[in-house]
Amino acid sequence: MVMNHMIQFVKQMSGKLNSSVYTSLPNQADPNKIAYLRSLQRELKNKDVLQIPFDDLKVVVFDIETTGFYPYKGDTILSIGAIKMQGDKLLQDEVFYAPVYSEEEPSEEIERLTGITKTELLNADSMNKVLRDFFQFTKSDTLVAHHSSHEKQFMQHATWSVLKTNFAHRIIDTSFLTKIIEPESKLVTLDDCCAHYGITINQRHHALHDAIATAKLWAESVRTVQELGFSDLKDVYSHIANLK
Image (cartoon, rainbow, N blue to C red; front, side, top):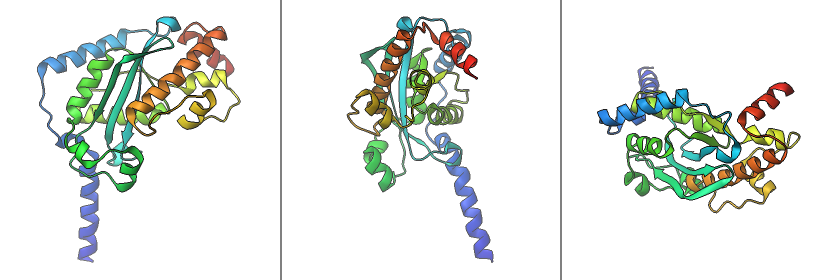
């Protein structure tokens, strides 16, 4: 009986430790970087992207690889990849990729799926630095992701755990536009969507390559909604609201 209680206690403590794994990494508070983040949050709060014409709309399309699906149960970010766009144009020289430091070895399944190794994680920058570099890269641009709820919950958790600040960026899901373009379609996964548009993914489950494929999907969607007569995100929001 005592042994059972001890096992249960260890499991509970392990869960608590895993849920705050980012906070165990180096987390030096740089006043200049904190000031930058606060300035960025104010800019994001005041920025209205809804009426920017699609041709002028700047976004950062990003993807993350993780150890699982539940950041509040201990799953963590393994890598972040991103590419900048303006309208339907991919800015090929404006890309971001960073694995995230971890002392824990990825499971065989995760390593097989993502190609990320323990050596790569041990040589990577801390979550603290990766997040700061990512926000320096994105600035106040709107973010785009496929199945964005996954990215959003992990970014919210990591940003608060490491930087002690809220994740303030707007994230638009690619399905936001595909709902208008293909309202009756059964397209769900990134593979299905890319196959539908003839988009090749060079290396699946690699954060940067998945981000580039997602960007190409966003480009196709932007071109199509413009052909349908939509000028900006506000037009799309209004149309979707009227459908409900």
